[in-house]
Image (cartoon, rainbow, N blue to C red):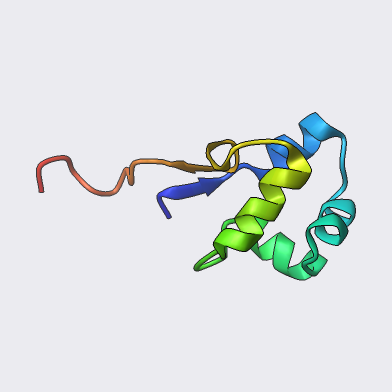
Length: 75
């Protein structure tokens, strides 16, 4: 998937566990794991906002676009 999720990076910078983040954001650790591992199909803006508030970051610190290497440019 061309959208990469960098929650692990922010967790490490904040020295915070997945469990603590899930509790502070108000989602289950299982749902956070799905998001963190890039398996989520969608994320609510309210959840993204809560993640940013708790981690003191911007949405771009958590999500980034990566080009799909399987698709040739110009196709």
